[in-house]
Structures are given as structure tokens and as C-alpha cells.
Amino acid sequence: MNEHFIETRQLRHLLMLAKHRNFRKASDALFITQPALTKSIRNLESQLDVILFDRKNQSVDPTPHCDVLLEHANRIIRELEEARHSLDVMSSDLQGQLRVGSGPVAVLGRVSDAIAAVLAAHPRVSIKITIESWNVLTNLLREGELHFFIADVEGVRDQKDLEIIELGRVRSVCVCRPGHPLAAGGVIEPGDLLDYPLAVPSLPRRFVQWLADNAPEGMNPEAFVERACRVSCESMTVLRRIARTTDLITSGPSSMFQGFFDTGELIELAFEGFSDIEVAPGIAYLKDTTLPPVANALIKELTANHGSPVY
Image: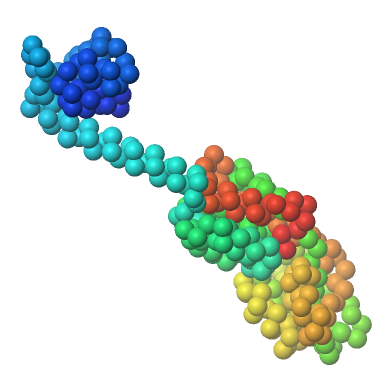
């Protein structure tokens, strides 16, 4: 048998000739000339090194070899039509599962609103949301567990395999409960974190570096960072509760605390330097990757208000 790929065009020609048992009728149905059909069938017979049709005066009859090929041809053409239908459905009616990752802060902002909008517009879509720190999300993305993630992307800008979509920049604030020992002055000095440490999500490297660079004189920078960051948690709900009920301090974009500011349950503290470091929310996905339509729909929602921060 000659090693040549069989084209779907040839399979369609085979099926039509087997149906009509006549070259002229089959060529008319295919909207090609009779010589073109004859050549196509002869080429296929040559490729397979078998006789597919017995040519008779009034008709052409499939041979046993042809019967075997017809069974496969029918299945192949049917599956190709189903694949085309599925692709058409995906284009007009989004469906399937989207696996998206989010940082603990981002998911409480516009991310949740964008996800809700996509779910409302496309009832056949399901979305699996993984909430983790940016470094864990990066690993999950590379392992194929996520289509994309939304988080602080400042620490992954140098990763050449990632495509980044910026979503604005946000300044963080530090907060504590009313009546906190630091509330009267409303100001934090780095040394205060030895007595009133932080309860925060996994901090990006630039925040950790700032703390290390501003360790109290004579104290090991790494030891200071470890002592200053007493609680690490990827749930802002938990962190806000800790700040409302203990003397620990938490930090994040002001929008994460606005409701608690309004009710007086939390107040803002000034932490010069640390609070001046901006958060850089963004979308990250692998380069040279074709995202599913539902992923593109969610990205469109997230970037709809370009220029305004995602949280």
C-alpha cells in the first residue's frame, strides 16, 4: 500500500459514487466534472492499492474492499460534521468549563462581578475558581490547571512564557480596629510591627523587600520580616475579621475595607513607604496559547472599564 494521506475530499467522492453507482450522477451531485471524479477514485485506488469499484456497463458496484472503506468513511465524515457543529456552537453559544485563578484580593473586586456577568449571559458555561497567591497561580497555569489568572502581576513581568494584560494600578492601605493602641496617632513605624504585626495575604517580593530594608537598626532583616508578618492567609474575609477583633494590622486596597470604614469597624493607619507601594493587578496566561471562547468573554468583561483598577 502506498503511504499517502487520504483526503476527506476523496472520502466524500467515494461515498457519493457508492450511493449513486454511476459516475455521471455522482459527479453532478458533487458539482464536479465526471473526469475529475474518475481521476479522484483512480488516485484513491492507487494509493490504497486495491480495486474499490467494479466498473460495469450500466453501473459501478462497490467491492468488498470498498465496503470496508465506506464504513470508516461514513464515520469519519459524520465525526467531522459533529466537530464543525460543536465549533459553530462554541462561537455562538458559549459552553464548557473555564478554569480561572484569582488572588485573594482580586476575587473580591471586579473579578467576581465579571464572572457573574459571564455566567448570566451564558447559562451553559461553568467556571472553576482557584484562589491562591500569585506564585502558586503561576505554577498552576504552567501545569495546565488554569486557563488564566488575575492577580498582582508585578512579580511575573520577567517571565518570558507569560502574556500579561494590565488592569490598572492600586495603592494599598493598612487598617486596624478602632481603639487599637496605634489608632490615636494613626501612624505606623516599621518597629511597631514587632508589637502589632501584620495579618496579610502572601506578600509580593517588593513588599517583603521594603520590610527587610526598613528593619529596626541592629535586627536581622529576615527575622524582622518573619516576626512582622505573623499571619499569612489567602482569605481577605478571615484577615478583615482578625483586624476587627485583635491588635494585628491588615493591608489591601481601600475598596476591600470601605464597608467597614463606613460602619466604623475598621480605620485606616498611615504607613509611609509600605502603603506607597502599588499593587499591579493583571491577567496572565501562557503565550502561544489559544484560549477557549469563554476565557475571552471573561477577559473582555475584565477589561471593559480599561483604566479603572480591577479592585
